[in-house]
Amino acid sequence: MTSAAFPQGRPGASAWVPEVVMTDPYNAQTASAALAEPVTPVGAFFVRDHFGVPRTEPHRWRLRLAGAVRAPFDIGYDELLAMRRRELDVVLECAGNGRGLMTPRPPGVPWGERAVGCARFAGVPFRDIATRVRIAPDTLEFVFAGADSGQAHGRRVAFERSLPLAVALHPDTLLATHMNGEPLVPEHGAPVRLVVPGRYAVADVKWLVEARAVTEPFTGVFQAEEYVYIDSRGTPDGPVTTMRVKSLITAPDPGAIVPLGTETVVRGRAWSGTGVPVRQVEVCADDSADEAWHEATLEPPAGPYAWTGWSYVWAPRRPGRHRLLARATDEHGDTQPPRAPWNAQGYGCNPVASVVVAIV
Ligand SMILES: Nc1nc2c(c(=O)[nH]1)N[C@H]1C(S)=C(S)[C@@H](COP(=O)(O)O)O[C@H]1N2
Ligand SMILES: [Mo]
Image (cartoon, rainbow, N blue to C red; front, top):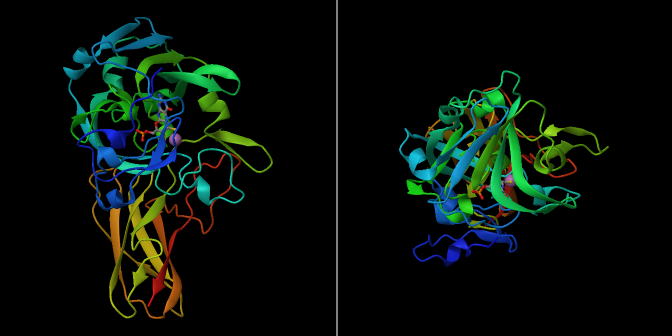
């Protein structure tokens, strides 16, 4: 297995460089400047790898559909490219995004708040090929396997993750070949990755080489040991699934100096994986006596799985070091809790967003 060159080394890559969180394997969060864009440029997009980038040349690539099926078969890249594609703007967020904010800090990659991005993915719905294999009637899940493997929990394992049958066969679950209009690059799963809108991005298996129908719940490392909510008593509460409602403040920057009495635009993004739109984003600044929440203006999202841009015009009233907070609520009424919801592996961290600025 070879590790691909770091994306910032590629000629013509975006000037916005992801912030490296770990070098081996390469893990980096989205460049902060890139969050101003509704579609995150590929060269600025966060990367989460467990085992490094495997070599997968498109002309050698095949996806095998097997397991509890009557007619297993495999498909090559050109054949897949010849099929009808669907294009969707989709937020990808690592389930561990924000882990670095939890106290005590759970083990795992110490992500800040930018293991998230929104890209335009195009690909063939998985169901368009899955329906060819005659899935056994007692099939519960599909297990999706990447070409990468390595040591985890004392065993050599491939990166594998399962989806309930209905989610796997949802018309928006894609075998993505393109990101932002270009063929996928190696670090984002070339030549083909899964994209499952609304789910934490661990579902989006990169370098996809196998889809296996199973009649028992899958218990692989990344399904049953990692990417699982475990409470402070050590009680497991199932794998991470849908992204919790969340917002991010993209302006002003943390530590920015904002002029007293002058209107400053507070901006950000908000998303939810629950399948319903973000209904409201509220902003609160602790420089006002009442510390009231004010409604931000929402931009229409690019689609049902894209994030929503928001803004709020703020006139700072008291000099000093002050905190700005943002809180998103979706159409189900799900909202961000005041503090990071703690769990043993640090997943689903969606507290109210906050930045500290200096008013002068
Ligand atoms: N094959 C494979 N797929 C994978 C991973 C991996 O390590 N190997 N990481 C997963 C996790 S945890 C995340 S958050 C997303 C990150 O996608 P990105 O690197 O394109 O941003 O890929 C997912 N798919
Ligand atoms: Mo992740």
